[in-house]
Image (tube, rainbow, N blue to C red):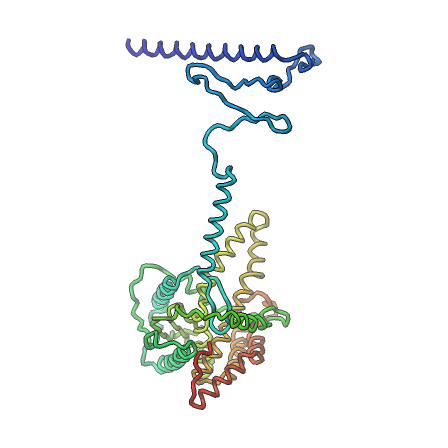
Length: 436
């Protein structure tokens, strides 16, 4: 019976407390109503009277004084604003964003961190002197390239030509000339190992980069550009170079230090070639079937190496991150399909085309320094456009400029004069250093 006795005592105590609180509330209400003048009592149509809300507050009576066994006479205070409105101080801890001083500190510290990260990740691209923001570190970029290279060797197992195959030897020798030209162009000592042919043996690697490899090696047909396309105007290159020279900007080349350059020829009809981060050059036999001269192959390899020199893969990952954030914000106000289309047309594709032009320019200087006639380059890009096919419907829907417009621009650009000067010096037995 002990539990019954304890339960009955607890219930009686709760009833006593509830009765005490109710009586106390009634007394406070009666006290308040007794102090309300007749002017504050408005008659209702039914004949009863209605007391104005907060009428006691008009006379400065504080009804927020509590008494009882659990309050101990605690008080809550209010303040009166200029409109004679009473505001009680909120209970509980204050939120940090409710304190203007804390908000100001957070904004200042956050802004400082953003500026520090931004300035700390700015890099200058060789030759064009364009400054770009790259979040991806050099080590991570290199590991990504090596991972993709291993995945590629897995996917093309059985199609990789042996090192002693004539096409493999030929491509390796041309690539060696390009890499040596890169060394002269950057005025660097020997900071990488000699280029060698990669074996088809797959090294174990934990991460998978097959999807990224497919994106980097995309062989979509190039689109034809109209004359008014913004990328056809290369004035931004000269402006960027002039601005960089005035500031004394030094080209960022740390990402190509200590690279182990490798070249691989894949027996596949795809007309494509690419250079992965970390110095991994891949050429498909489909490309070699259409371009038979060494100068033509040097043009394409120089272009792909130019992508690696400018860190376009890492910059693309950074840009895609910002594009994704912008899209997520716009999703709240605009239909997702519209946002995706506008993002591709006005952000992703123009950025991709500009990178292609930049790689064209760097590659032109590399092939000239390697001893290959730069006049061949425009015809190579025009021929490449014919092979892949061009359509007027793709004026603004391509990641690459059209071959014809690409050739016209490169032939008339100032970089062609610079490349011809380097080529003549090389043919005369003199090498020009530091042209990048």
